[in-house]
Image (cartoon, rainbow, N blue to C red; front, side, top):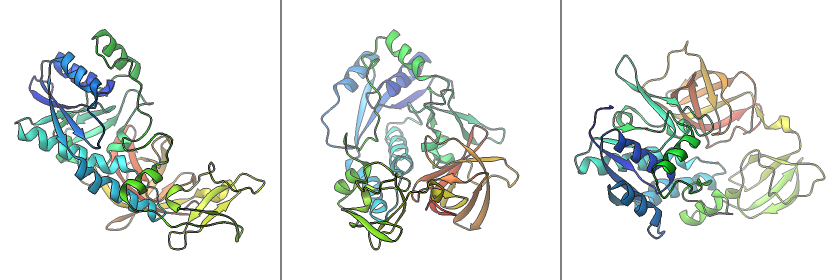
Length: 352
């Protein structure tokens, strides 16, 4: 994988993708940049400047229609069902890596590098797997759990062994114009100041029903769309109960949102996961020590995993987890090795 070859690098104009291209060049690779256009924003001057500084050509791919169809609309449907999807996990599988590998293949390039913070390795059995990045605060393995051997055999991640500060220092020392560019804090589709549910429902043309806020069985307020809310949410409810309130349940049929003032009611002693995907193509052996993360920033918690049927897993964490949220990704690890994951369906014992 380290032999010089023709590679493509996914380019966004940010410091991570630009340094990934820079590192590919320093290792002797012949580099072509690929930019996936996902919206109607004007061309990014920083992207053009970075490619010019690196001396690489840039291939533009218009993916706006595919992004709308494969990512925005399905995510909007999930919010309208009272669930909280993770569009980035879905996008990496159904659009980004698929389109990058397709576009690279059309110009005779077999490998694509990206600026993700994750390590790619190859086991003794010849299969590829992902390991968490050196920078634990930037590790992005959670968002890549749906990648399989098809994608992993054709990609590379030059930043996996670096910290963010090291990446910025490399960019500065190379004179790259993006060296001090701020990191994006939101999903690529999100409008600043607007919640994901609002953005997705507007762009997807699908909104959840309005309805009542219920507390101890009585109406304490109204809301204008379940797509604006998620399990465990406390801020932005605009309901005065005299005590802190959290969202405990969302009923998509009626539009009712149930509130609780008891944090323990948000705990799930187990939960189910659907659509499991395994990076090596098969579930880990039963004796494999597992941890699970139910949100990107949540720590890994030891767990047991029991197949419920061919498409559903029952997950029992070592301690109850707070606000296990339908639609979010549950991602499994053994140590720092990413095994795979699935979509949370429901929690048992509170929370969903």
